[in-house]
Length: 332
Image (cartoon, rainbow, N blue to C red; front, side):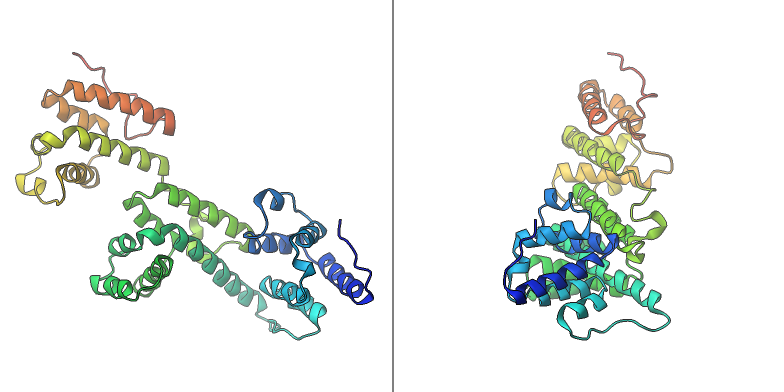
């Protein structure tokens, strides 16, 4: 447990800290655990439920042993909007919302904090692909080039991309970011950010940028189906790349439409398949691809792809795109 320094001054200081921590609420503890997540090991944080358990963990981390421990703890109190507790620790006065519309101000403050923490996470995850983010966001090349020439870190460049998006897209919310990441096929990043949103909403409540009509996670997006379909279309593209133009013709696409895409043949084949999926007036499924391959007498390819479907079913479960219940048996 917490050790007590025999020094009278130190003992008085520690009693003051203890009295302050006794006034923390369960919500305060959650917020402090989140703020200190870089210092507290996850296994330790999971076991902390009470203010005194948190205090004990801070003692073990050495936070209370530092000369400016009261200032450090006061700073934490201010961050969770407990300025009155910060004042008890240092004797200083800290600005506090005291007007009648304090609740509204607190909500705005929570929005600002949660937004800052969220984009900090985004910049770490997506910094390496900041340029692709800019391109898929629809920002002008001149802006992307300017950001690149500034020579900052990739994390800062990603943040600047989102700053520019926020100026051109109002309001910028999670659903817009999620759509871009789907097009970039960054599915694990989406899952990681969804988890971050859940954590932030536990602490700060519903936040506007997270598109709270969906409570942070969009219910109209089946991420497993999107990812499974994307993996499958890449597999199909690999199989048909040597005759992808014939595949396009059999599917009813004009030569001009087929040749509109750039890249190597595999990329062209994949883009063609994606356009078939996105532009089809009727739901575009595996059964459609299967029919085109049958018309090209590619029964061996169909067998290979059906094996891939079995693997994807095991990983993602049955998905509508594969329409497994209605796919007819292949006749040799």
